[in-house]
Image 1 (cartoon, rainbow, N blue to C red):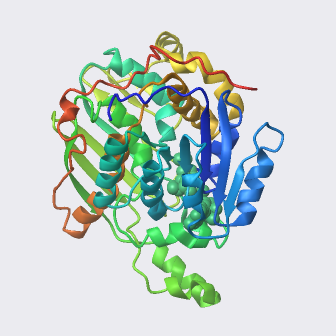
Image 2 (image 1 turned 180 degrees about the vertical axis):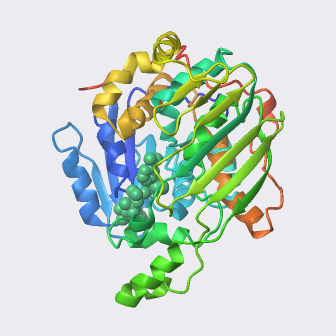
Image 3 (image 1 turned 90 degrees about the vertical axis):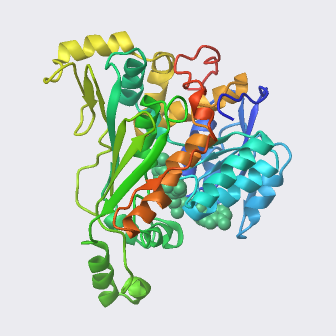
Length: 421
Ligand SMILES: NC(=O)c1ccc[n+]([C@@H]2O[C@H](COP(=O)([O-])OP(=O)(O)OC[C@H]3O[C@@H](n4cnc5c(N)ncnc54)[C@H](O)[C@@H]3O)[C@@H](O)[C@H]2O)c1
């Protein structure tokens, strides 16, 4: 499925499953893209499905609504006039929903992580290969502006051979995870009973593209270490002492605050990933790229570029950014900023996916990326549980990484999908 192009579609007819915090953002974007039609909406909670319908009431879409039952989403997958299904539900539902959707002949676009076990990663790969349906991981951070710029620079050899990269997800979600309202049925708090890097893709996706992981290189093995939990159990105890609602969490063991993972690739490069969603840090995805000629670092903001041991001056940076501005940003960057979604990167991702399907092009983030980037979760759990023992990363491409072509970042074809602004 790497480089695989499904037959081009006249219209991309879309169904959405999961319309809590995240789903409606994709829905709003899709409603702005020409030749994308919204055919169905599903959320277990009727009020969420109805609120999503209201969001697009001024458009030409009149989606079928599925709601009220745990398995109502299966009916959406079975609906005949749908080509693509977005899945933005709690993590443990991602793979079962994606598998069923592909079996019904639908392409799928899954929120991160696409899977929570290695077995699920393989099921996604095998099902996508057999059904010839795209299984896309919705890693929006691959489309952030600095990441796109520096990916283009890396491709053109600006940094020379890349030898080391870093990424992370350092975001204070402590209060949000314990909020009664923020996530459906406290699903995100419960995920923190696992110990490892639970949310690797935001940090890993962009640097994996710089290294051409699955397309010229692959992740070989990793070691992962977590410290203790200093925040979640104390918070659970404190809340439970005041409110019985929190009693089930009072004596639970939670993920350690900080997890650090190092991955070695088959070509001898290294990737460092971090994950901490319970300490009071300023948001960071780290985003470091180190080559033999130069390097970049994005966090703290703003992103910086160097060709030695000093960051570029603003004037040098501006000239470099102008020279290496990637095609997608030139074409649609301003519109994306206007329509928003984490500063525009979400719109760029959704537009690019729909443009690929309308033009019959391979997708940027395929099932092998979905599997490899998601697998870091369960692999780090295993390493952490075994005194940071080294763990092999499965080759989900089954050898094809040696010959797979890098992602097309130049929009050699396509790029012609219009946006209604
Ligand atoms: N890429 C990003 O920047 C980003 C940002 C936020 C969330 N996310 C991801 O999006 C996904 C959803 O997160 P969220 O914050 O929207 O969570 P949420 O709890 O707000 O939304 C999940 C929705 O799924 C619905 N749901 C639960 N069980 C269902 C079922 N059986 N059938 C149909 N619907 C069901 C819930 O009612 C809820 O509305 C997660 O995977 C999360 O990691 C990604």
